[in-house]
Length: 222
Image 1 (cartoon, rainbow, N blue to C red):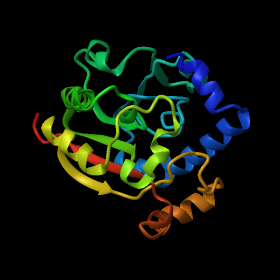
Image 2 (image 1 turned 180 degrees about the vertical axis):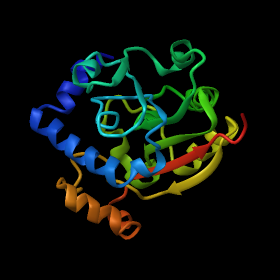
Image 3 (image 1 turned 45 degrees about the vertical axis):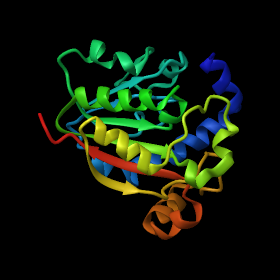
Image 4 (image 1 turned 90 degrees about the horizontal axis):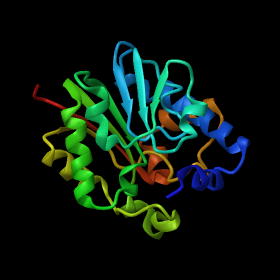
């Protein structure tokens, strides 16, 4: 699938991308950063328009994405690899990631077997006590809207993601079933202060708007 063409249709204006960046800057500052040390090596297996990597603080930031536009929007200090994350080990070589971040990617995979393989690859490329952070649309919460995107293939709930991670050897350390709204077009507040309020009042706010789940898995063996 021509990802650059598809995403240019889905995120059709500079205003949309600017709005997404505002949201992610606030999410990184007020939520995701607490899972990440500034000395960490962070790998994003589906970097997209680098909303996460551009806004998170870390020693080294590496993103995998098949969309060639990812390199164009990456900030200085963000390395983008235009290849499949299934080849992660070939690129990292002896380097190990402290954090692997996976946002809205598992639903694009062809099968549940690919989901398990993704977890296994993450486990193999994490440092001792490294963490896998997953932000994932939950079909149990989205219902039929899960299939509104032509490239969604694999239906998942928070429980199926936990099972896949367990098969790969991970220990589950955190599960927020109702975290963020389903899409950027949902009625999540776009101002940084309002996003702070949304996070401040979790899980109450997530109960009404959360369609995506957030999960943290730990690598407990070397």
